[in-house]
Image 1 (cartoon, rainbow, N blue to C red):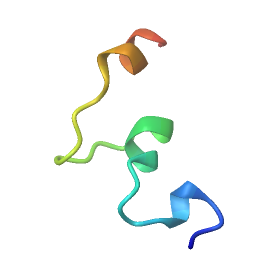
Image 2 (image 1 turned 120 degrees about the horizontal axis):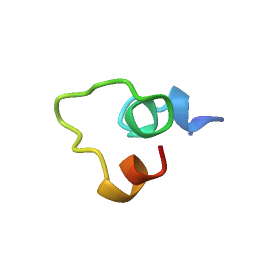
Image 3 (image 1 turned 120 degrees about the vertical axis):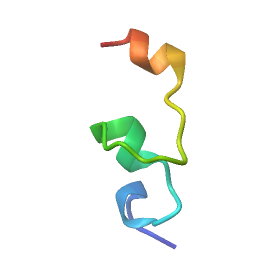
Image 4 (image 1 turned 60 degrees about the vertical axis):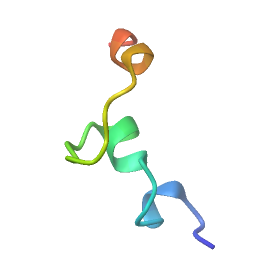
Length: 35
């Protein structure tokens, strides 16, 4: 178990929370609309 999503290597946290581009992850259109 990880204490934070950023510590879990298979989490989409890096992409969805801080905007890191990861080739395997498609950004959610609703998240993109938030700004």
